[in-house]
Image 1: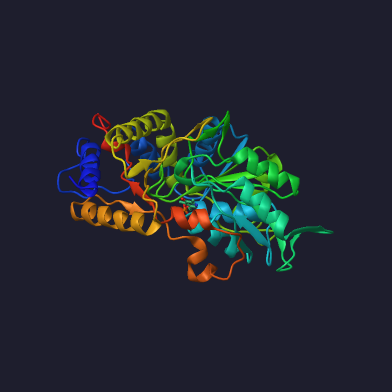
Image 2: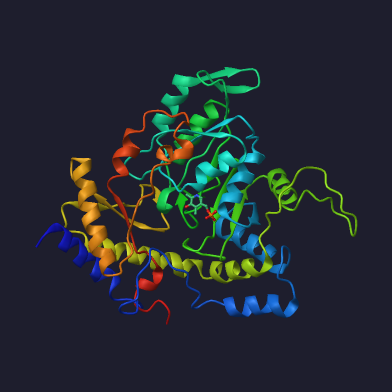
Length: 400
Ligand SMILES: *Cc1c(COP(=O)(O)O)cnc(C)c1O
């Protein structure tokens, strides 16, 4: 049997047994509200008329996020991109700055920087778990950064380096303690893109809570979804207060007067969406348990294949296993890429909607001119990675 056929058989063994309807495509990660109170909570919004940007489900969602992550404060917003943009603004990122981030991420990580008029500055990742490489960050800063009055500056572009923005890719925690140590050495604020990492922990700390502020996404294919949504996590009362203020048009509290003291945004999550979030957060432990079981199923099914390996949980960490990822191991990246394409084509022809990892951000046209260190690892890994269907619904018994 060819390797492609063997990989497909392993996939079918995992994806074919759950609640999937024969003939229906199996997507990467699908929303699911079975076993939750979602209907009742949404009905409460409609019955009460509280559907918009305030209400008990918004505050309930924020409290529940704090309870599940250990954050002192959570601020719910309309999506993960907005959460990132707000978080970066809160730590002082502004027009003309540079923000250090990895090229292996969803485009939103770089876009949030660009939305503030700042520029991504790309730093390589490590192959094992795909997070920003602390050594590469340190080396890049040594190579280009200079402390001056007013901050740390990029000697070659003259722009200020305003923050470090690592990503916890596919729910696997990056080497965040080491990244934080480098950022602290340089006095740079740390913002974590934990969009994919709800329920992921490094040591005893939830992803997103290592630096000043971290962000989550509740977009349609994330571990839990509010339709669209995001949140900021922080231990800082001051940052949380500013986040709330700036995301509600910077309106000063008053029973009738419309007074605003800054250029704010209209970013708050509607009650209707938050109701969906509360319903799924109440179910989070079961969901995380199922994701872990699914990852174990995949690992069994792929165990005896030699040309591929699954990404694993980093040591000392608890991953939410958001997207199970397969790595093609062929020495030559071109060969790995060709094998990946064969598997993609064969799988899509039988409605298994696998996806290759994102196109690297520094190769997208709008970031082609952005400053960068050496990105050899990201470029190598980008040829090799394939995400596998990872919905908890793929487990039999899920929606009983
Ligand atoms: C999903 C995601 C985002 C953005 O979230 P949206 O809610 O879609 O705006 C940001 N970063 C990463 C790494 C993501 O996966």
